[in-house]
Length: 607
Image (cartoon, rainbow, N blue to C red; front, side, top):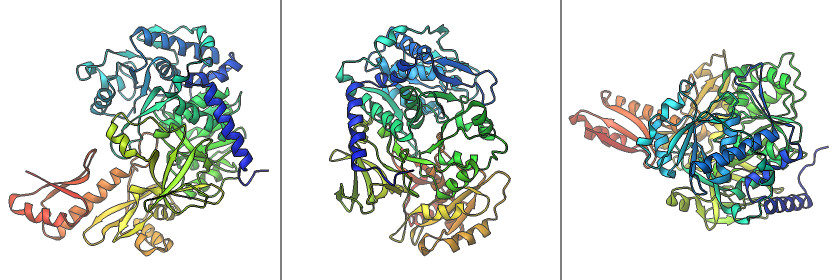
């Protein structure tokens, strides 16, 4: 029987458990050693080199943690101290897990976004003064080594590039790491309380602003995040959890990987590409059955894709938990996935890189509430900023921006100015609009910067997106503001189709118009696109859609005014935001600039 909510006594018990764990585990290494110490010979990780690999690599807890200790020794031998960053450009595999925690034990690990360009990698490494860079061997899919070859010339702090294979072995530059049993006398037994405040991991933010920042995570934040996920999702010793999110993302690194180690749950890694591998999506339910997976976590876009894959005769009764985060799961995608899976509910969570994971969860044993992301995690404080006033309870709350503080909050960005902008009177500003009901359940209504402002009328894009997702054949939907000379912005809807489906844009437009009661929210333009732009973890990447919308609006306006020969590109710049770059003949330039300045978008004339 599920509870309707956590009682005050339940919350007090959870808070006390978190306090005790934080006191006992000043390092993330102390927490992740708990599972292996209880069952050193049990499976720590099962690794498939590809989703249908018939011969998985299996490592025991003792072997994996011994390799983490050996990696720590290796890094110390390369001159890595507590303030020295080790950048890790590796997909998910056992060696990546070892490298991240080995670097965090003695210095600072920074897993890098695998989709970064060479220029972005150079910028990140120079921003953090990286001392070492780990990358796969030459000739691997994705060309990661080729992307960074010779990088030392552009990054003065970099002492070398260490080559790490992806075949399941654990070796650095050809040196096989031998498990060091000394981990048993170190990890889990730290008495140095100052370690709790030490930055041990840095992560690039999700990139939804178009320019990832570098978040500095303390041991305390990582421990709090991992414990929160374990409490909420009820990871159990001897179970198996599939890891499909990349390890440069808090969902992949803490909510699952660290969580598995701390709880004694086996990590199941179905290939280096994770959910980006089409073979995993196509064979997902067969893999669940074959490997008896108990817990799976995926972003909403992946859940939407899995909803289209028939379970057929696969026995997936072993799968007891599906969790989702990174972005809010639309109700229609949730409905479709549950209909395919046959489970009772999807456990939703809410968090961000700056929080080392999630600060709210649907909690195991508590009935989820429709469209909610659950209740606060232990020791997490929440507040709502509305009209300049901070509301900290009692709930229910007004609608406003969600702020938070507590042990999970990061130590700031590498850039101090960015850090100052992120906080208000000690509270971290999330940038998300939400409300909190009388029982403390949190409802994320959208990003503050995603709100479409049409003639002074604030429009929640989710209402448009949820309507579109009910149209037959629609897989993904995203609404953004399209510049308009009169209203400032008008809604524009982008959709992509489910596999094999054909979408009539006119029929879709009519359907959406009928199903959105709020007249200003009805989209002016509907566009069916072949592929929805997404971030590396599967979030819809709205900055790209805003570029498309702005470019189309600008070219349409110029054509109406007889200036079709004027060239316009919409560009998102990290420091300037979205702007229109215009190339026009000298006799047309002034007119083009005057027309385009009617839009709420910066305009730049090119010679």
